[in-house]
Length: 347
Image 1 (tube, one colour):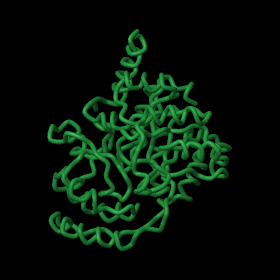
Image 2 (cartoon, helix red, strand yellow):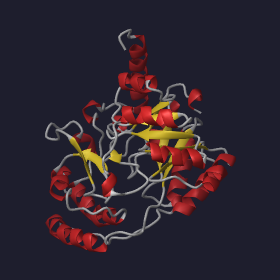
Image 3 (cartoon, one colour):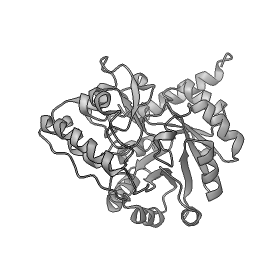
Image 4 (cartoon, one colour):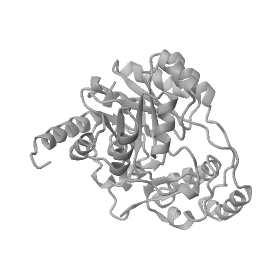
């Protein structure tokens, strides 16, 4: 699969409306692999985006789906967090959403992947069982599972995945770990993790986490990756569906660092450190998607009020290098930088 890409660049699937058909198509047309994000939408909405994407490109593309997690959460902790959020909601003129578990239309989305015979299907928050992966492969899909540890890499390899997306601690957005366990919150940086996984499984690897330019891409390829996945690098592209305030915040000097938090969704995720994160980071329980549903009205109200201090501004550690360029131009620039890096004898 990766050997057929003119450029070993994958645009990360960013849920919540960021990964639009326009963005994915632009990246694929430029020689990379564009991705749609199936998370937080219905199966039919995902199908509609696939159809729209196919009107923009005849190049390969990918679709990412969330694997459902554990229904069991600490109800008392969830109740305490909801009570704390009530005051914040009142200040925003909103109400706290209802905490609930859902499978994000899992079975129906699998049906769409099969029926649409998507070129690449990837998974986050877990690994589908062997039968699911085999069915997708039979339908013509190349299957990628996102992993954050050697243990997860072994699980995905044994389930029959075609490749692994190795996500390091530097990555923006949600950590893709299979379990939402506070005792396992310590994440491994990309390059040590890439080396460990490479030594443990014999599958093609995609490197993900904080990579923003051609030199970073070259370093990941030299470390054994077959391709490199970039998300934050594409956030400021005009084709990106990121909120304008989110795009502006990436270049705003008041946001000086990123941090991990469960405050917005109940799962660890990296974003620009803002007031909401600072105030609620230590209070949010490990309850996903329950917390996501509770804070969704607050995040929407904050965006409407033009207040980035209370929005989830997902971003990787290299966010300052995000460029405001059309996606095709960005891919071309990354390709040029990659070629320069390979020619650098000191590299």
